[in-house]
Every structure is written in structure tokens, then in C-alpha cells.
Amino acid sequence: MGPVAVLGAGTIGAGWAAFFALQGLEVRVFDTGPQAQDQLDTVMARARPVLQAQGLLAARPTVPLLYVEPGPAVAGAAHVQEALPERLELKHHVYALVEASLDEQCVIASSSSGIPPSALQEGLRHPERLLIAHPCNPPYLMPLVEISGGRQTAPWALHAADAFYRELGKQTVILRREITGHLVNRLQAALWREAVHLVAEGYATVEDVDRSVTEGLGARWAVCGPHRIFHLAGGEAGMAGFLDKLGEPVEQWWASLGRPTLDEATRKALVDGMADAAHGREPAELAQERDRAVLAMLAAKKRGEI
Image (cartoon, rainbow, N blue to C red; front, top):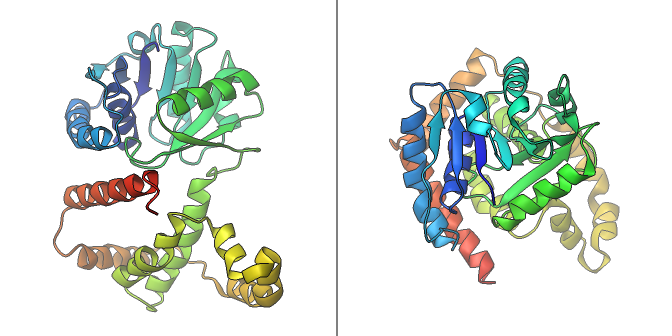
């Protein structure tokens, strides 16, 4: 497999760079930020035991090389993973700088968490090769990559991206149509909107809302999606039985869901509530705790224990 170029060394970009490098790929990272190298080093150290535990650590891992110019970073690349900040004009600017250095068959895979691929394709010389390949965070830990093409994305690009990520041990889903926020973030945003509403209106604390997910919903979600959960709730009649028995009440729940805004009071409630829920632990410590717990759960699933 040829070199991989990563555009951006933020949280997602550094996570991708670590994932690729620790599997032995040649990785070049473009970022002009003063903290880029420290970010790469920190995430590499955090990701190494995760990939080792997953059996994905190469016998000879590589170290990502940092570039301050995009052209040399992508020259000769077999795959480009774009993880720049969510500013459309910035992404377009960098695409224009790198396209001339790329082979026409090189996929540009954007990790954009919400911008539709058709908007990203505007102005490209070869828009047919651009698509969304959005990971769950952090990319070195979470298995899923959601792939979405735009109006001009060629089928070969979708197939190439799907094969690329699967070869590296990822699970993929390919959206049938593009939509703002793609798939995972829309589902996540829907739940968080109600979670924010419940906190902002004083129904529960941040900690109790989170515990309701981890100790209630989340345990099932690790093995059943939301449709299957309600299919099983319908007993022998499955989904049809559930809809007959509880379809009307569910519609009433939908009608009562909140529509919060992130105004000053709501932001304060969330920040203060998260500080209480953290019990003095810094984000880095919480991230390590998350990685250990998710890794253990994924290993148990792989062994067929859950």
C-alpha cells in the first residue's frame, strides 16, 4: 500500500495519522500549527497500546512525518485523508493546492463531520474522487467509518475507499444519499439534543443523564441498534407488534421532545454539570479511561462473549 497523506493534525487528523502509521504505512501529515508535532506525538503514544491490543500493530510501525506545505505532503500519495477544521473555504483552498500533485485515481476522503460531500466537490478539477469518510472518534479506536459520496463521486472511488478501510480492519457503512451530518452524527445529535433539554430544564444532572445512557441504553446499543431493540420489544410479533402496541405512545414522546438552544444559561449548565461529573479528572484522564473501557468491550465482542 502506498503512502497516505493526512491533511490536518487536530484531534481527528492525529488519530488517523497514528492509526495508519502504527499499521506500518508511510504517513505524511500537513499542518502549519505550532502544536502539530506535540499533538502527533501524544496521540501516537496513546494509540499504540490500543492497536497492539486489537492485533493491528505492525511489526514495524512507522512515524508520521510532518510537513508545513501541502504539495510535498501529498506527492505520490495513494490515499488522502482530509481532517482540516470545519471551514468550507479552508478545505477548498487546500484542495486547490494539492490536486495538481495527486494521481487522478487517488481518493480524497474528507473526515468532515457535517459538510455534505457535494459542497466539498465544488471547484475541484476531479470532483469524482472526493467523498466523505467520517470516523467515530478516536479513529485509532472506534471501528466504524461512514462513507458518503456526493453528486459527482464516481463508483470506483466509493469502492476504493471501502476496500482501503476494510483492509486496515475498519467496519464501513456507505450512505445511499448524502445528508448534512451524515449518519452517525445525526443519530448522536438527536440524542444529545434531548440530553441538553433535560439538563437545561432541570429534570436531571449531566452525570445522571450520562449514567442513564451508559448503564441503560448504551449496554444494549453495543450489540443491538435502535431498530432491533424495538423489534425485540415486540416479542414474537417483532417490529409489527411493537408498532401496534407502542407506536402511538412513541409518537407522543416525539411530540414532547425538547428543542433547546445553546444560550449562555444552557452552556453554563452543561459546563458546570460536566465539571461535577468529572469528579476532578482532567479530559486526558477521561480519554484514557474511555479508551480502556471501549477496547475491553470491543475485545469481548470479538471473542463472542457479548
